[in-house]
Length: 182
Length: 184
Image 1 (tube, each protein chain N blue to C red):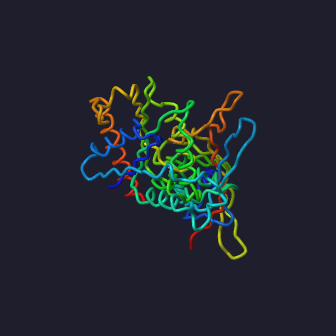
Image 2: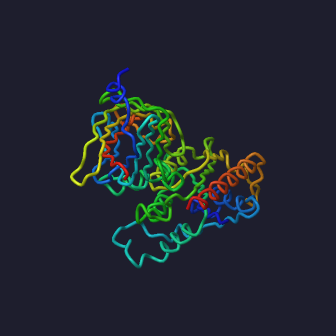
Image 3: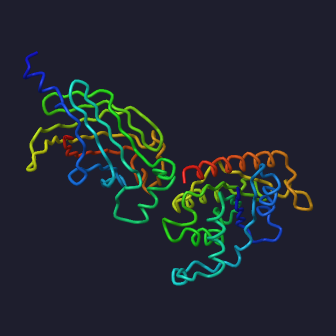
C-alpha cells in the first residue's frame, strides 16, 4: 500500500469535538404509517480521535429532545419513552472505524434507556478544511437504524385500519462539524 | 416511605377501598400506606378553575400525591373501564403538564370486582392513561375477581392468595419508589 492510499484510510491525527451550533443529532420515525416524523436533541457532544486507532464517542442528554408540542415533549421524557429521570443520557462508543475515501463505517455500542446494543453506523467523512479563524475542521454525516423496542421503548397505539401509530424502526442521524482541539 | 392509596370507588362498602385498607395492614416495614378520602369532593375538571388559587380539594390532592413516594390505585370497572371520578382525579393531578405531581411517580394498580375478571380492562386503561400523564406504572395488574368471597363480614381481606399478591405488589412498589428517590 502506498503512502497516499494509507492516508485515504486514516482519520487525521488529533482530537476533534463537535461544534454544537453547526452540528445536528436527530431521529426520524414513521408516524401513522404514511409519514416521517423528525425530532432532534439540542444538547450533545461528539468526540472523534483520529490516527492509527480512531475512536468516535458521543453523549446526548435525553431531556434535551426538541419537538414542536409540549404534550409530546412531556410524554417523550416520561417512563413510556426515554425515562429521563432514570436514564438521562444516550451514549455512543465506537469499537472499530473503517474509512475508505469519503466512506465512513463504525461498529459501535449504543446505549439508550439503559440498554446497550451493538450498532453499525455508515456515512461519509469530509475534510480537513481550515476555517476562517485558522481552526481545522472535519465533517461527519452518519446514519443508522435501530429497533426502539430492543431498547425498551415500546409505547404504541393501534390504528383503526391496522398497523401502529409509531414504527419500531427509528433512524438516528448525526450531521457533525468537528473542530480540532488545539 | 409513604404510599398514597386511591380507591376508584366512592361506595362505603367498596371492595377496592377494603383492598387498600388491607394494603395498609400488609405494607412492608418502613412503608406507610395512607388512604386518600377526598375523591368525592373534587369538582369536575375545568381549566377555568385550574388557576391560582385552585380549589382546596385539588390543592389537597396534588399535595398528597407530590408528598407520596408512590401510589397504589385500586379501581372497579364500569362499562369496561375505570370510573369517571377516578379519571377526573387523574386529570386534576396531571396538570400542569408535564411538571405535574404524577410525573415519574411510581404507581401500582389493582382492581376488585364481584365478577370473574378483576377489573382487568380498567387496569389496562389506567396503565395507558397514567403513562401518557407521565407516571411510572410498575408491575403487572392485580385482578381481584369474585371480590365478595375474598373479604369477611367485617371487610377484612382473608384470601391468602390475594394477601400474598398484595404484599408482592407493595414490595415492588416500594422498591421502585426507592429507585426513583435515588434518581431524582
